[in-house]
Image 1 (spheres, rainbow, N blue to C red):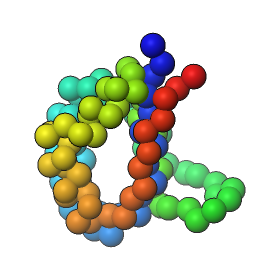
Image 2 (tube, rainbow, N blue to C red):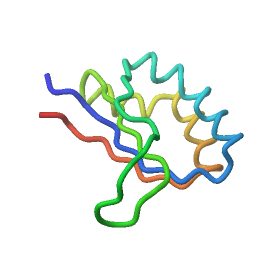
Image 3 (cartoon, rainbow, N blue to C red):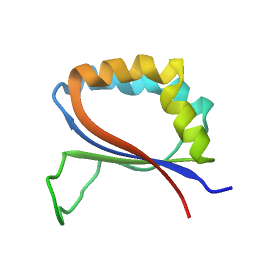
Image 4 (cartoon, rainbow, N blue to C red):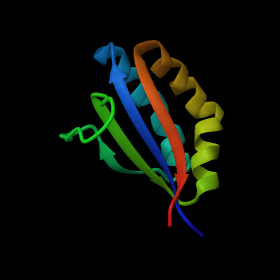
Length: 95
């Protein structure tokens, strides 16, 4: 079974409140087997409009990645994130 990946590009407006998002999202990530491959860190802009924070999260399957996003646990966290950051997120299936 192919793994699933969240790819998120984020500009955080309120770093203190963003910590609340991180804490609130943790139960969903644990429940759905999330493995962070990239979380912030140094990056090099190659094309397009960059964002300050880039995240890649691996899940056991595409369905697990989708289920995590749609879970009640994550939706609580997402509401916080949407108040304090601008983000683009996609879920992709691995090869």
